[in-house]
Image (cartoon, rainbow, N blue to C red):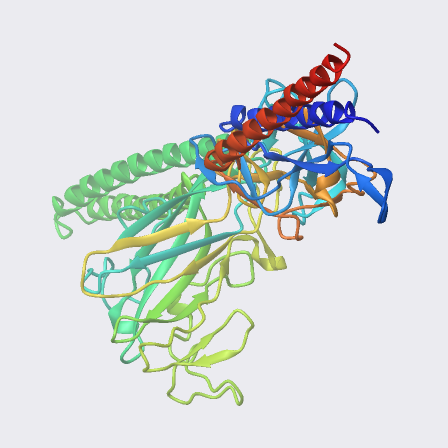
Length: 581
């Protein structure tokens, strides 16, 4: 083998330790690189040479070689950021990013992403983050993994209102606005504000996202007609006539009202003239002595009787004109009633019954025409009066009243009426939206001795919205935040993990490529065992500087020792050459 072999052993040591120093230097250089995973060098001795000795064959080493450089995929710590598109992975997963030029999919732990001008979620190098688009109905991933590109000019479709919930307190001390004992509801659709005790308005939406104002007027019913120990109110839900009636119909009704008012004015003028003529005829009759002038008295009496007939006819015509004017005034009201219900409270102020007052003939039942006692106090089995108040639930069964204040009975939903005669409920708006929009009102009311007030109100509709911003949640869902306040899940980021991540090859820019040694990637989303995602976070480098500096010292000493082998071998060769002198 010869003494010169030690030179090559030293050279191999220099090469190996030089490469090790390069790895240490790369680790230290990337100590602040997001998602960077440190590396380590593994040395191995080289194939030994066999030499024969007195005791047999022995092996002499030929130096060292670098066996491999391993990537250390230990978890890095998280850094909090202000960007909700900064993502960090806890676990073994990798983000998948596609090269826009070659189409190659790479893998990375660096989650410093952002949306570009086209709505594409990309890393700083412009690689497209991969994921799944979601089914709008189920919210579940559909299709194959693809670029997460969101259409930034999309609209969020409107959602028509179907349910309105009103939680109100109605003042138990509110006055009855009618004439007590007359058995009539004081509510007048032509003057709802002055004929109700309280009103609450809510904005609702049709299927096109058009906003409409719906107002519920509450009026206290005649206390003389209340069942014993119970208090009752009416709830009238109204919309503006312009929302549900064609303009031409409104114009015709307004014209009919104007005509009726003109006819009434004419009838009142005629009646006034007839009354004046009657008064004049009566005065003329009173001025004649029937004894002294019987013929004149008879003639004046005939004139007076004719004036009386004319006055009575004018009075009938005036009353008919007034009735027609009132009818036309109601028809031409600015409001249209679309729901009416009766609310019954017990003496504790609790709502124990809500009754739909649609009469099934296209109109409304006046509260005085209802059996205000037996309509509610019926045994749910026999149907006979029992003296116990029952409440009808959504399912149609009667629920017995309870004195337990902790128990809240089901409150039925009262639907808006389009054509009650045909059991057709809904609303027809004057636009191209759904012409039978069904809206149901639920009253969570109380009647306490305090000012009437809305505790809360809610409705489940919303208007069409435009995309305002994009964000990502901890499930990896890409959320579109729209101007109507309704977020939508547009996509879900995919993660990949490998059976042997040590087989991945670094591709630069914090990315890796898969190899046969790494195995086929296992692709999934958060919750499928591929890792968890944290938003507003970035995974820091897992480089341990203290450990790297220790490696630097040992590598430096190894390099120095191997260089000493070369210089010492050189001196030995020099002594060998000097033997010839």
